[in-house]
Length: 99
Ligand SMILES: [Zn+2]
Image (cartoon, rainbow, N blue to C red; front, side):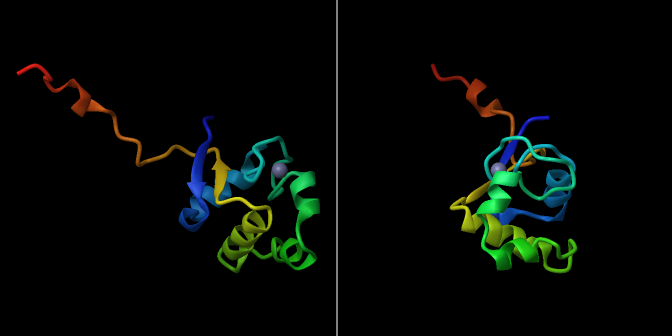
């Protein structure tokens, strides 16, 4: 599946679920285990408080924990294997240029 880059503030629950199920680290896009939030390397780089908060359930603080984790890692976007809905086909390009 293609990766979408989602700004941290735009991450929603479907993104997070999709990311957890995938083998792609949302911070560095390298491989991770499914059900893990991050790859080992990124996880190891987190502050203890942030790493601990990643054990919060989705809907119970996980969203904020993930945002904090990505920011701790210096990221402004997450790599999420999720189709971007905002991608529209560039149909307008086909309008006549020579009038
Ligand atoms: Zn990583």
